Length: 165
Image 1 (cartoon, rainbow, N blue to C red):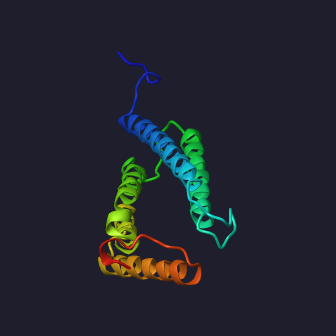
Image 2: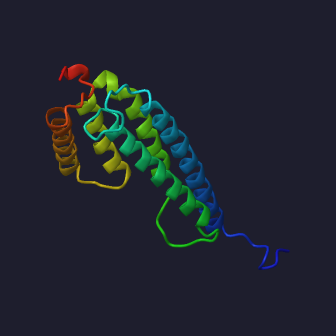
Image 3: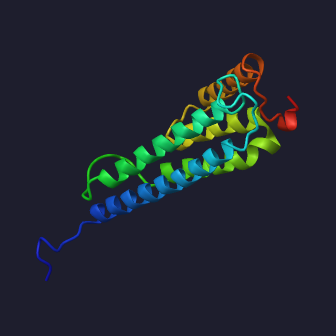
């Protein structure tokens, strides 16, 4: 017969599995961001790391991605091994990681505008938003604003894809 100390609750097993998945997702994000960071240095730029150059923003984004991935790993490692009411599951980090990989594969053939709008919309859905119209509008508007800012004001070329922008 099991003593109370030997009894394992199903919720504790689920929390430990969720914790493990978060740690694995964080490690995958660290590997991906490091890979992208290495790729940033393949961007040829006579301006080096000058903010007006084509290497600056990708460097800024990938460093931020790496820092946040490391923070996510630390949070996963520090999470308690017992059940708590957090409402978090393994699905969100794994799904967002998959979306980022898919985005990396589709941004050149589809183009920045289409791929990024789809990423924003899908990420909102994965993270629990149920406002379909609002999510679609925000995804498109935000993507177009960023596209115009980068191509017109910073003179940074983004993939045109099927729209040929």
